[in-house]
Image: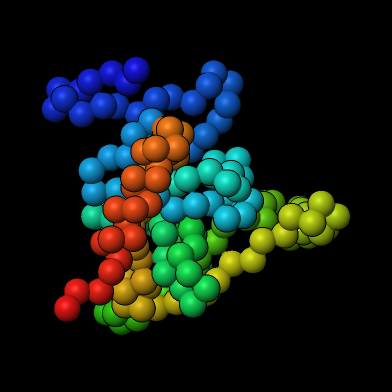
Length: 173
């Protein structure tokens, strides 16, 4: 059972010992949050395919290097929001640009190390692409919320949250 905080709100559970996860693990759906299915392995090991990401719909302000649920043409996708290092600074107000990247992005300090990582990923069939650049004003319109954790509660809680989200998404007359 989760501990109670001073505000009498259950605190998230910790991941099993020895397992590195960048997100808190929740056994409940916090108020103001919704669930988003993790549809691929682009954020592995922090968010794994088939898990449910907990998205805080009240936290929509861009924070660099945080993971957000972003509404795109194919539906809601989870992306890490990164600065556009290709655009010279300073930029005019409203003209800042960002990249949407997977947490499992290509790594390496040198060009050779990055090329070797790309080759390894091709061999493993694990190469993920980024999306961008995107203007900040356009991105802000598409942000659904910030990913704050992973839901590992029971199926009844998940189904209730899904039904609540479906009702909330209905158009109003």
